[in-house]
Image (cartoon, rainbow, N blue to C red):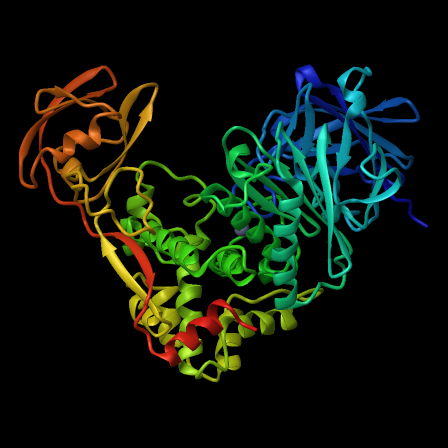
Length: 604
Ligand code: ZN
C-alpha cells in the first residue's frame, strides 16, 4: 500500500515572516520526482506565481542531500531515487490577503496553494499535515488553530496532525493560527463555526444568530451537499479592508472591524449589512463554484490560466443571491434590499466599459483585465460580478413573469445543481443556458445573446415594474454617492468633471477619467494632481462645494500637476449624467403585482 504524503508546516521565524514546510514522499518517482507550487489559487483568477516566495528549498534522503533542480518558475525535480525523499523549504509569508500566506509575531495564516508543493503524478494520494506552533512560549502559548481540515491527531482548535483526502483538498483548507475568538452554531445538524482574528468586541451571539439564519436559508434552497459535515468562517477584522475567498468547507473573509455588530447594538448598520452580504456570498459558493463548477475546472490546472466564459454564472449569480438571501432570511427589509440593488445597478451604469465588453468576454479575460485593472478599467471593462448579478435579476423576474410565477431562477439553479452538483465533469460552456431553456420550456437565446454576449442595456426597469418596484435614475449628488438611496433634494448637485477623484497623501488626484467627459476633453490624465480651478485652490475637502458654485457650460481654468510638470488647461463643466439608480417599492401596485413581489422576495 502506498503511504500518505506527510506534510509539515511550522512558523520557523515569525519576525522574518518565514514558514518552514517539510514534505516526506514515501515512494518518489524513480525517474526523478517533480514538485510544483501552484501559479494561482482557485477563486481568484490571476497568475500569482506563489513559488516566487520560496526562499530556500532542498531535498534529502536518509539524512543525505539529494540534488534538486529547478525546471521552471514553479517546479523542481529531484535526482532519481528509490528511497523516501524529504523536501524542506523556507517560504516567505507576508501577503495579508485571503489569497495569500502571512506570518508575523501575532498570528499565522496560509492557503495551501501558497506554501505546499504538490508531488507531481501522486496528487491523488492522501495528505497528512502536521501544524506546529511557533518557537518560544511567550504570547504564542495562547495560539489556537482554526481550519476546516479534518483532525487526525490534534485537539479541537489545536496544533497537531490534520488530514486531507488528496492534494486538491489539502490546498482547499486555509489555516489561521493565533489568538482567536471562536463561536459555534449548527445548521441542520451540521456544525458551523466562526473564528475571528483581530481585536474586536463583537457581539458573537448576534453574529452566530444571523449567520445561522443565512446559512439555513441557502441550505433550504439546494439541500446540504452530501460531504458537508462541517463549515468554518475564518474572519479577519482589521481597521479597514474587504474581501473573501470561498472554499469547499470554509471561507476566508476580511471585513472592517467597525462593520461587525458591537454588544448592545440592534440595528443592521450599512457596514453590518455589507459583512452579512459577504458571508452570504462565500457560503453560496459552497454550492455554486466549489461543487457545481465549469467543466474546465474539473480538475483545476493550477499551472496556467484556465479560460471560461461562465464566471458571470458563478460570480454574478452568486452576487445576486448573496443580497437576496439577506431579505429572504429576514435580516433586512424590502426597502433595504432595494437600496442594495440600486447600488449594484449604479455600479454598472457608471462604467462605460459595459458598452464595450460583454460579461462572457469579461469572464474569459478575467486573468488580464478584471483582475488587473488599470485607470482605464471603468472605460473598457464590465464587472461579471455586478452585471452578472443584474442579468440574474432580470432573468429571475423574466422567468417568473413568463411562467406566471411557476418557474424562477431558484428552479434553474437547483436543476444545474442536480445535473452537475458533484462528482461530475462540470458544467459545459453552454450548460447554464440549456438548462434554463429546458426548465422553463422557453427559448432564451435572444436574451442570452443580448445580455451575456452583447453589450446592450438590460430591461431592468420593465422587469422590476412587473414585480412592484419602481426604477429611478438621477444625477450623483456628491463624490461618495454610491446610489441606491433617493437623492435629498435640498442640496444642489455639484457640476461634473467627468472623472473619478481620490485623495492621496492629502492631494486631490484624478484616479480615472471618463471617456467623453469634460476632464478628458480638457486633456486631464489619470494620476494628475488637481492644483487650482478658476484661480482658486482645489482640494478634496472643498471640491464638491466649489463645483456647486458654477453652472453647466462654464469654462474654467484648471491647473494640474502631471509628475513635476504644471499644466494649465480649460475645462467646460457639465451636468453629470443621470446614472445613479434608486429603487422604490411601488405603493400603488395592484394586489397581483404585490403578490409577485412577495413571492420573489419572500418565497415560502
Ligand atoms: Zn465570489
